[in-house]
Length: 259
Image 1 (cartoon, rainbow, N blue to C red):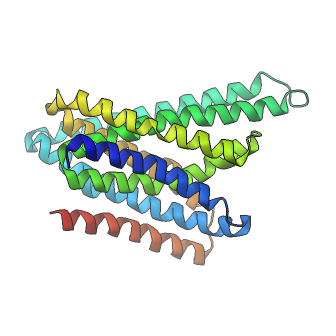
Image 2: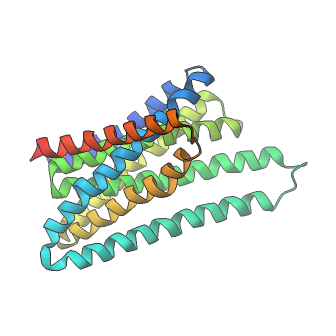
């Protein structure tokens, strides 16, 4: 299998399969969804942390060489700052889209705007995911598989949340599902563009991996872990620790098997 074929297949799987699984997840009774979703988020947190710290960062350091370890650290910090700014921008746009209309008259317009915003943000997010997966595959085939697995683990609970917003904005289930599948295809676009761009500049691959690691770390630490802290009872906390550990171990086993 060629590298380009692998990038197309895994970006397609990461995007479309996660949206499809999330769509099936919505068929469960609401009470069951509420019970299962936090466990999925815990596993995804572990998978993202494992992929970033056990796979992407070590490969970035090896690719750059020991004399450029500091520059990999700079790329990692810059990547975290970049994703912070991107998320801040999306939050700022969201707040302003809700401020310009009165609650009584334009409630349904705000809900519709939130649905459009979610779709636009999801499309951009999937393009970036495609770039990260392509960078990983261009470095090592197994690293690409591990990265795609970690991204898919995160995408499923995120897509469930997207579905909830789209349904709340007034879309039917069928239309929300179709739009989510359509935006997931942008991951393939990001992967193909990155393949041709990064092949011309292979010296930049280690830094692309560092930025990919920054993306996964930021999502895990800034987005997922704060949500897990909302459940502070002992039983839920133990389950979270166990599932985060399982997520890390899955990535660690995949990496050790690859090498």
